[in-house]
Image 1 (cartoon, rainbow, N blue to C red):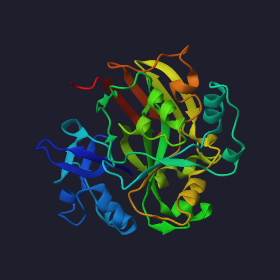
Image 2 (cartoon, rainbow, N blue to C red):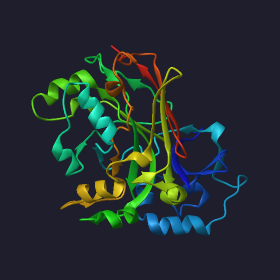
Image 3 (spheres, rainbow, N blue to C red):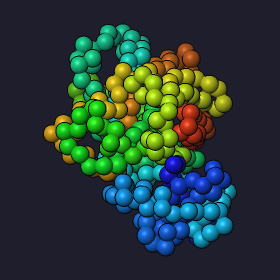
Length: 308
């Protein structure tokens, strides 16, 4: 299933899932209030709520089912409980460091590492991304995120799949000049990532991807274009650390809750920092960035300038 959050013609926000790729089900309205109105509440009891969904039979003619053309898709999880972003694709790490004259860090091969980003600055498909006024090195990052659907602590990598609800496209926007300066102090990234992260257009439940398992992930082609020009190509199956290993690390001594979001880090070739300015300049207002991942859809956003 593909879960979405959307704005209805009357201005209300609701969550549900796609029906026949042309309609969206308002799960609260269509179930006569049995299911919640937002995805975060749905995930609090995701297993039982998915069973309820399976017990219903929805058609495009019934109450609470709307043509997608009448709706505005938002970030499928507008306010995740938290956002941890990992650094799990080896090619990206090696190339980005090589571009700065640095070798690989031996410790990278010992533990999957992550940082916390701003979980309250989430944007969805079609929403504008405001370039930080203080930054001139704006970058995109082509990633995949998983959404936690079941509470757990000290989760082992081989049990982690039981705690994953689904996956979506993630663009971890980065102000590279702010990031570079702050990391010289020995902390971060923080302000360089603080302004925006976009996800969407929907969250695909893990069962849909099961036949595509490959390597440490799934055989999902990943692409990024800027103003129609193809810049990045990769595949999720090339993960060095699986999402299971990431979840094991994140949950060590810590409880993970439904609605938390975990990012993969950038796929190889998936950002300007890695490609180099000789391939493409840093992003500026007016640029349109489109990320596309097999089965997960297309996420497109335009850069705009900060209003004065």
